[in-house]
Length: 392
Image 1 (tube, one colour):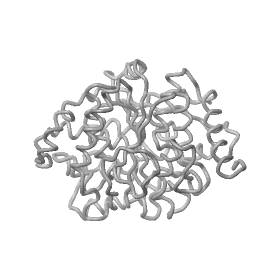
Image 2 (image 1 turned 120 degrees about the horizontal axis):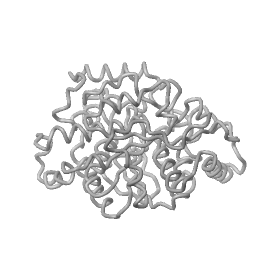
Image 3 (image 1 turned 90 degrees about the vertical axis):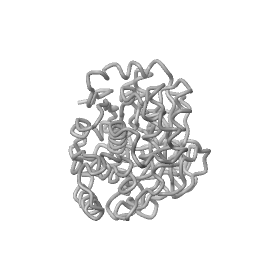
Image 4 (image 1 turned 120 degrees about the vertical axis):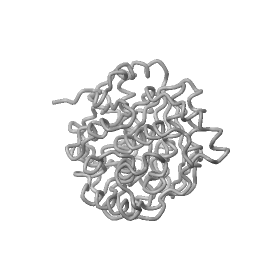
């Protein structure tokens, strides 16, 4: 049975016209890249053909968007089993939409050869280290400033990410913000390696004296101790931009964590000791006057319907209600085996793929049967260009 083109995974009553409102302005895409050493813990991430290549994934993704191929690697990122990065979906959607896009560096280990806005230059440490994201306030402030500028462009903003290991840091941040996330996250491999990730998060929280909900009074502390740089930047961008624009957080588990951070910040107010820096205080009104009704999350059906995850439960626990939509992509009918592997639970999401696919199908009234050939064409062009022959 073919999946619906757009799956309304979780849609609180006030949000029922969100996608209709998005159609009123053209889309603009940003991809925030960052590294976390959590991704280097064996078994955490499959966002790379080998563990040694994982640090290059985000840089290669955005290079492919801009140059049509990776420059820091000899090919676009792949899962070790063979499926290519979801950047091929992103590229097909951007081509269809003719949408402008920007890259935001929140702290990536490898600097891509692309023009970027720089919010931070320090990669995150592993969540089992004493501090995972030291410059969390500066990253949040930079996000606020970037979001304000983006909102002035009169576009629907699609905020994507490329952060290997980010579903594990997402689980940790959600737990610290009071959301029961254990065993409910999705990831880049079948089954999502839930046991390993739960064990890592449980031990890291215990080591730091944290329990579920410990960081609700000071939400950025969850990112500082357990998260990754993208989360703080993306929250700032979405909060400030939402005052003037519709904002779609492009991703699954990782963007639900960002939504949880946004909701927790709004509920906690701006009186936290975190916000004593004069430069940051001047930016806070942009964030804390956010309009959360202007924010939604969009992902792929591979994530929303992942039998090893439970995104509906995560959405129901958000401190501020937001809708979640999914693009009904289905690669089971693809002529390429490496794309059909998506249907077996590999890769699933990243680089804003779900949100951009949904947007392309929504704005151009496409279904999966119409859009899939355009994705296959991008895949074929990349591998013909990189290898001189098509890798099936």
